[in-house]
Every structure is written in C-alpha cells, then in structure tokens.
Length: 108
Image 1 (tube, one colour):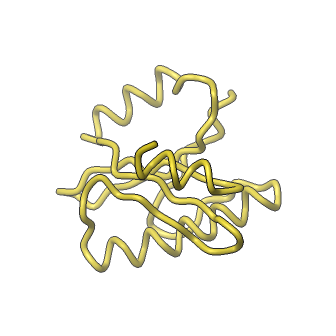
Image 2 (cartoon, helix red, strand yellow):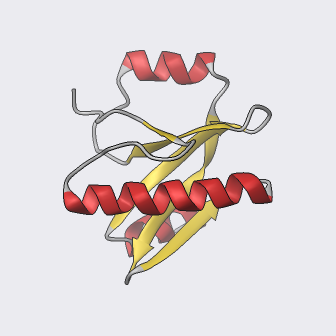
Image 3 (cartoon, helix red, strand yellow):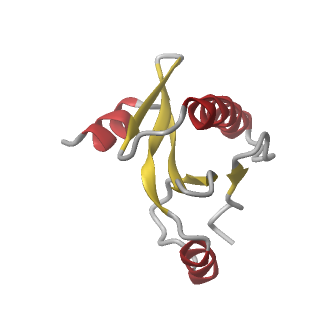
C-alpha cells in the first residue's frame, strides 16, 4: 500500500487534490467509485492539472500525502479548504470555501 492509499484507507472521509503548481490553481475532488465525468476531465486538462495528493480525516486528525511539494502559502490554503470541505462532506453539504475550488458532486 502506498502513502496515498494509506491516508485514504485510514480516513473516514478523504478527497484527492488536483492542481497546477505553476499557477497555484487547485481543486478538491471527492473520491468516488465512478470515473470522472468527461467534462470535468477536459476542464482539468485545460487548466494544466495533475495529481497533487490526497487529504483525509483519521480519528479526527487531518492527514495528507502529497506527490509534489507545495509552497507554505498553498499548504495553508489547502489545509483550511480541505478541513472545511471534509466537514461539509460529513455534514452532507458540499459548499465551496476558500481559494481551493471544490469540484461539483461527480455523480451528476
């Protein structure tokens, strides 16, 4: 099991981080068994996104595994957005917060 699988399997809730490190443009994507809709996939390609990592909540503590290092500013923004997003997931709401845009529910 790699570090990403460890975070996801140990977490009650988790999301993938996609982004463009050169533009500091990121999004959080819910991990669902369905494939990413084609329209979102094409949007993410156009925005130059790649896989950045995963973040989850395990025993009430945020955990992350990153494929790429982030600047301190991006890491702070990601931490705030991810915790808020995971709390919204737990509460049944997916309202976006902060500068990290949250992907629409992928089950559309």
